[in-house]
Image 1 (cartoon, helix red, strand yellow):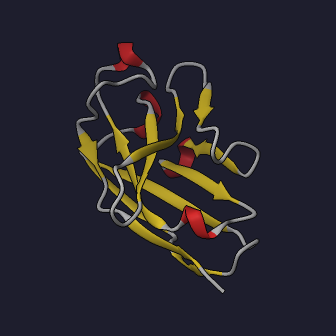
Image 2 (cartoon, helix red, strand yellow):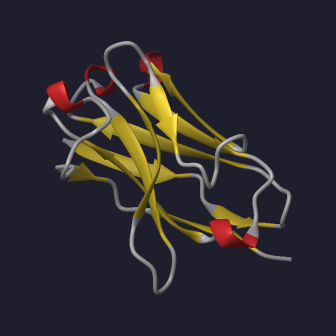
Length: 123
C-alpha cells in the first residue's frame, strides 16, 4: 500500500491549489482517504476525509467552504481542492488511508501515509 501526495507549492493569499493523493498497490476507492496537515511547531490536524462506502465526507471547520475533497476512482486518486488560501493554511499536507473500512472516516490511528507535500501561502 503506497500513497503519494503531490500538488503543493507557493501561492499568494487568496489563491488556489489542488492536491492529489495517488494510490499504488491497492484500489483506493475501497477505502476512506483522509487529508491532514502539520504546520511548523504545531500538531498534525485533520483537514478532510472522504469515505469509501457512500462518498460522504467531512471537512474541518477551519477550512469549510474553502476546501473540497473528491475522488476519481478511474485515476485511483483523491483530490483536495483548496481555494481562498490563507497564510495559516501553510503546512505540510499528508494523505492517509486505512484498510479497516468499518471506521469510515473515523479511524483512530491511520495505518498508511503518503510522504507529504508542502503548501506555503505567502505574499
